[in-house]
Amino acid sequence: MAILDTALDPSITASLTGQLLIAMPSLTDRNFAQTVIFLCAHSPDDGAMGLVVNRRLPEPGFDDLLTQLEILPTPPRRRIALCSGGPMDSARGFVLHSSDWSGDGSLTVDDDIVLTASLDVLREIADGSGPRQALLALGHATWGPGQLESEIRQNAWLSAPANEAILFGADHDRKWRRALAVLGVDPLRLVGEAGNA
Image (tube, rainbow, N blue to C red; front, side, top):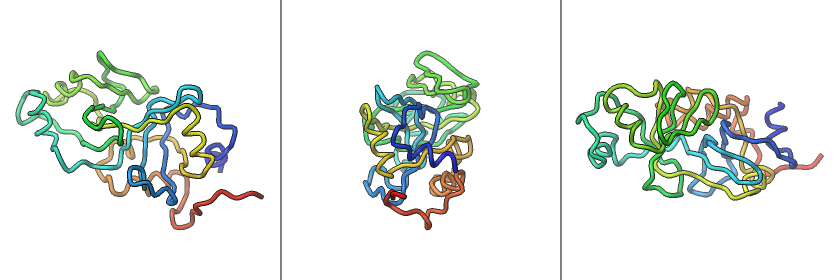
């Protein structure tokens, strides 16, 4: 399986920007156990930044958050999923969305996905327009230069192509298994240690 070979290759030099990181079952850190992370930026020299896309936040609700931010109308004409994007900077919001909308503060991740950190996108969504697909993440995950590559070599993560169903789907509890299924992997058959042949 080529994608697994690339993910576990000790000489990882290619950018994983726009890919999913899927936590291996052996990763037990409470911040990352059974997470699926979309990598918004990655380079071996600069490190990486991503958003956890499978941890729904019970509070605040989307309507409550818009009220706190004084975004009208109330109630909004449209709602999007709200999730915990990672342990870093949890008061900061990021909207991960389809590339059919872009504004000030938007970063094009790839041809299909854009990351926006300005309130403009939330105003558009609340008004019933904005990007076709979107999710709001509070917080993010980051790695220093070489840190993610080291964790991949230690068998903490698999990488897989991203797709809209996993990024924007509502069934957060099943995203981890669905992301592994993209690779044809059954989590019950994964081992926690990398071996040598």
